[in-house]
Length: 243
Image 1 (spheres, rainbow, N blue to C red):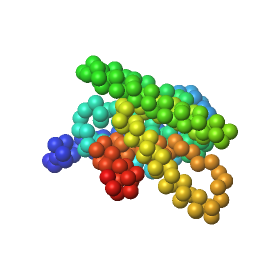
Image 2: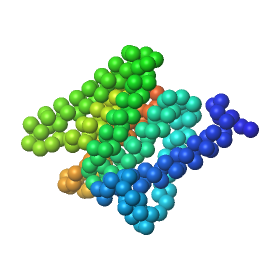
Image 3: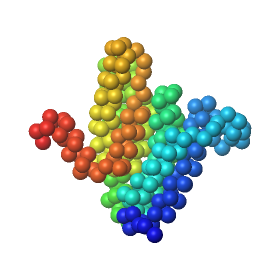
Image 4: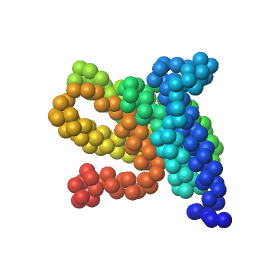
């Protein structure tokens, strides 16, 4: 039987199948968030069974993500922690895009799992745990500062507190260097997509563009693309190719 990157192909198939199941569960969670329902409430499940069908896009995206995670990280703690994070990122993307809110329960879940892995990695190396805790402060701090300064200048929220909480939780997951890369990359992606959207609207500037999806896209890029590659890319962009 074939092996891919020293992993048996049946393991990829099994993980893709699990990823698909998790993807459908993500759709259920999204529906609960969008309708302001409790996830574990029986009524929520009964209503979901009546009105929802198989969500093929999310199933396929999550299945592919799990396969690529296995290829990149093999059987490891990183495979486990990112397999937990990816579905939550998908949920944050969908919910924030649709209703411009990142639920507190979702941010808290990311924080809680990040805290667990910080403890696990801290047992092996205390410096890793310190970096992850500092990443939480840096991630949340950067976006909180932007929110406060933007609010003082514009007289309104420059960024939602849900974004601040999300970045704090992700900082706990990724540590200082990567959360800074995620921050810069999110603003870069946000600027590019926002310009495209404004042009598509024929220069009409009305309509709120949520920032959460940009954070999610930047985070996914940081998971799948090596840190050195992303750093070099950002340096090339901001130095106009002089780096």
